[in-house]
Length: 258
Image (cartoon, rainbow, N blue to C red; front, side, top):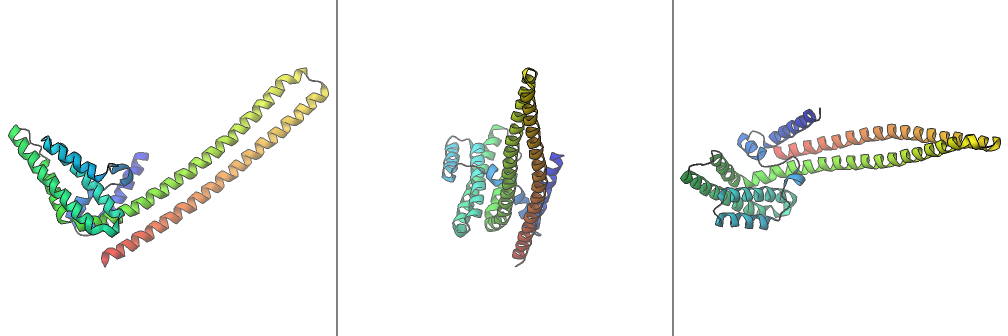
């Protein structure tokens, strides 16, 4: 079930990306291989400069496949950084074009080396063309990636907030359940001692048991009501977030038309 839900979510986001790309099938194909559903998790945390240095080191070692992979990681990071720094679009266009050009060139070296050694990767040609095309379409890549990533970050933020609320409810519930267990343990302890109690002591112990039971029932009733209320609030919050998401997407559609 979970897998089906995840597949539907991915399909929905792929359709949204396709909608952003409009009739440009080549741009959609490019972006579908270049951006991520969860950029925070997928994009490298390593500084862009360090990734480039690592790629250059691999070139010196003539490990061109590894250099291409490092440059590719740097390209992905630069695209994401560009979407989060709209005021620096001009600078990032140059950065990405430089990186994609270097990636394509090192890909050519990897291809030549492979051919000489007799085990050229059949996917290299496609990867080289991928980065060459990205270099040509860098501005469009950044614009659409910005729309896609910023929308995804909003959605991921909503998911994170929902999980935080669930965790808080779970902590509260466990504390209440612990109080109930301690109450039951006290009753059980009194029950063991009751045989040795006098009449008045036994009556007092029974009275305490009833008070404890009543408190347990009251806490259970409160938990049940709070659970129902939490579900209602969660549903309302989810509907509000969905409405805001649809509104944002409609605004994006209008932006793409103009």
